[in-house]
Length: 462
Image (tube, rainbow, N blue to C red; front, side):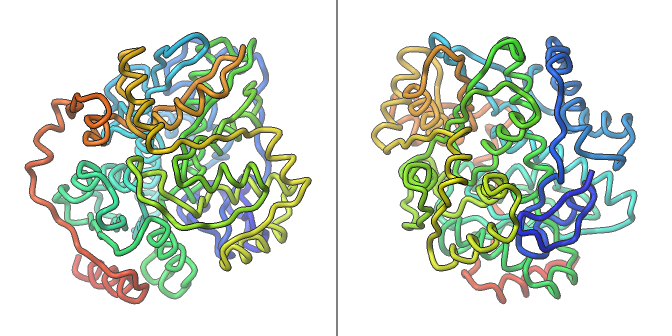
């Protein structure tokens, strides 16, 4: 299995190389040269299996000979050992034909744990075998950072630097990043919004002297291994509702497009997905793009669902690559135009996107009302991101079962939830002392050279 860049001008890599590299050297994102498919019988045989066994069957075709079967099974087992629900991604029913996939039973109470716990184990195994060390730099709108820190904290061969927008994450999200005391963990509160953090991350990857000097690696959803890990729960939940004998649809609250792109990969693998519904908050660039074929940045407005406050959705580039029939030059041209603020998608590519994706938008008031609705009508307490998904999903219900992804535990956003239903959601018992722990955080300007110097100095000090 080889991996190629969405921009068509970078070396082909193995799975392990693509995982450790992150961003391609031409600025593109790695995707598999071909997408393996599973037969209906192979999908049906997943019924009743553990999450870990399904994960092995879904992901194994993508990794080539990077790991033996036993090595890979061990990696998967260690990745999900600390989840607090045996089903890992359990379903609850919200109404007729509408189900909620709970993705918040991992160590940091968010869907990012599914990918980050796996990628932490993958990195640890590969780096030990290669006798190498790397510097991981990540940008987060809230949940990726804490999941990355939890996955890599305390490892001798990894330094972790997480950029998050100062003052634009919830208190609990911040605490999850700033309270770990491990010497290899560095939380950096940066001026600006998430798009600024993500831009600086990409700038570092595109500075090859710096990149090579610190052995830079990325664990944002630009990393293919992150996407691959998220493909699994589309299979486990669809099979539990009758796939492949029946079609299933999914609604995904998303800002960076990684989680819903994983659903697209699952569909390409043969999972009978009818529709993939993009749910946005008021920062609705993905919804506007699906309606108008114009991807136009309009700035970020802070919301009560901060992990979706994004205008540059990195993984949308992967969707464009497939929509343009694998034409890396066309994708590279669009990304060059985006530097000026916008690009337009061709009619053929737009038709391809609309063959798979629908979309919807949720205002702040609608998000609050949906949290109220969920609590009143189902007893389910929704985080504001999950509420965006439920609101949009309710607009797309039909005879096909709909699964909405609940991306975070409501206790990660207690102010928004309490404002909606008058009840403050409590953290799980094992995390209740977190708010009293001292914080380790460095405030940094939105300046590339400052960040590079800080990272090099911190590595040297270790």
